[in-house]
Amino acid sequence: MLDVRDLSGGYEPVQIFQHVDLQVSAAESIGIFGPNGHGKTTLLRTLSGLIDPWQGDIFFDGERMNREGRRGSRKWRNFNYDAVTRRRMDPKKVARAGLIHVQQGNLLFPELTVTETLSIAVSAASGRRGWSVAEVQQLFPRVAERRDHKIRFLSGGERQMVSIAAGLIAAPRMLILDEPTLGLSPKIRQELCGAILEIRKTGLPIILIDQDVAFLEQIIDTLYLFDHGRISGRMSRDEMPDHETLMVMLFGERH
Ligand SMILES: Nc1ncnc2c1ncn2[C@@H]1O[C@H](COP(=O)(O)OP(=O)(O)OP(=O)(O)O)[C@@H](O)[C@H]1O
Ligand SMILES: [Mg+2]
Image (tube, rainbow, N blue to C red; front, side, top):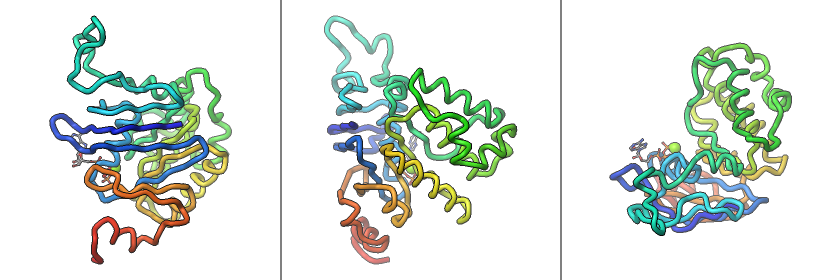
């Protein structure tokens, strides 16, 4: 369903990741595990078109998401596309195709209420049938309790729940979750993990970044190890070692 070939990218002029190949089928969920600052978020932001790929191709459901050609190859037939726009990828096109990205950190609008935030997500579904507001409120009772509150009065965990709820309303056919449980208290974290497991049970494929191997194991079918901007390993859930062994695989020694 998602087919990424030889993808490289970064923040001009610094290249962050290179030669990433990734295939995710419609029935599969994958995890990406790797050290801080090595480019996981940058890779995912490139997949969803928030930043431009430098090289390589991204297909979703058979459709090419990026403009053909390498960055810097400016001409397309007789028309110089890059004279009009330098962007090689359109995040709206990616969202319309159903690849929905819940970004790392709290990127919601602080002055909107929860209800207003969710109503924006409805428009992002662009006609496809996503989760209803009632359904996300059932999954996240806290979202229902806080519906009339502004985002800026919500806790970190509640904001994360609203972000994921908005992602579900936007009618995902594949859902990207970038460190959804980062920095949360154990109780809220457990609530959120439970909800993500419920989402997984609906059969929706998920791309999940998380530092907790035990949690990843519950959600994903395949784990990719990622370090220094490259995929350095791939294993099925059954082959996944514990946290300690994974760290040794990534860093080469015990700390
Ligand atoms: N907007 C930006 N402009 C320039 N450099 C950036 C930008 N955002 C991140 N970087 C740099 O890109 C590198 C990769 O960061 P990225 O956030 O992709 O890593 P990560 O693996 O997701 O880390 P973490 O586990 O902390 O979320 C880092 O060196 C970071 O400083
Ligand atoms: Mg990150």
